[in-house]
Every structure is written in structure tokens, then in C-alpha cells.
Amino acid sequence: MSDLTVGPGTRVTLHFSLSLEDGTEVDSNYGGEPASFDFGDGNLLPGFEEAIIGLREGDKAVVEILPEQGFGAHNPTNIQVLKRGDFPADIAMHEGLVISFQDAGSNELPGVVTDYDEESVTVDFNHPLAGRVISFSVQILQVNPIITH
Image 1: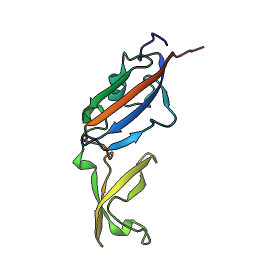
Image 2: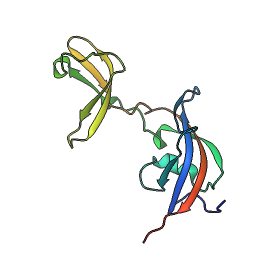
Image 3: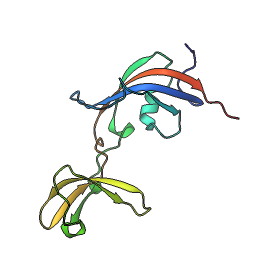
């Protein structure tokens, strides 16, 4: 076991789970392949990285991540009402349907249908976990130095 701690210049391998305040698990890799990332590479949201700074191999932690440090606050301006005619006629419209759109830079932007009728479709472009407090459970499996040549 290494004395190296999670922080800049390290590659981290871990198991994690994300749960809502009511205990509903929304994501987990426990029981599956662990995740690995280079600290600061953008693969883990900054609030989640901050929560594991200083942990070592073998450490376990459960940390509450507030929306501002996690998936952001729910932003009402990210809810758009679009014309029903802008969607293919054969689409089976229903609440909760995730539709992929493209933003101005041709990047994929998922939206969730929250309401619809014959004239319009309301789409929420907020991250599904925006505005939610997340319980982040983590087990650090390995902490290695990033070797640069």
C-alpha cells in the first residue's frame, strides 16, 4: 500500500456510487470495473475531486456534494418550449423521453421531455442531477504518480 495521497500529479483508481438524498442510487461501479482518472483531467467534476483530496489507497469516504460543487443548480432558462412540428411526426412522444439535440457548436446536447401537446414540446436541458444534493461514496483502490516523459 502506498502513502501517496490523491491530489495533483496522481492517477486514481476507485469504486464509487452516487445516491440522492432519499437514498436512491443513481450510479455505481461497485461490483464492476473500477474507474481510473488523472487528477485534474476533467473526467471528475471539481467538487468530487475536492472531496477525495488527501485520501490514500484503501480509504473509504461518503461525502455530501452540494449542487454548486456537483451537477450545478437547476436553471429555469434551460427549459425550452419548442414547436411540436420541429420533431419528426413518427416520434413516440412521452414525458421522460430523452432526445439528443445539437448545440451551436454541433455538440450533442441531451434534453428531457417534461410536457407536450399537439402544439408544443417542453424540453429540460438541465443535467438530470442538477439542483440535487448527491451522496458520493468512494473507495480508493490505487493512487499512483503520473509519470511524464
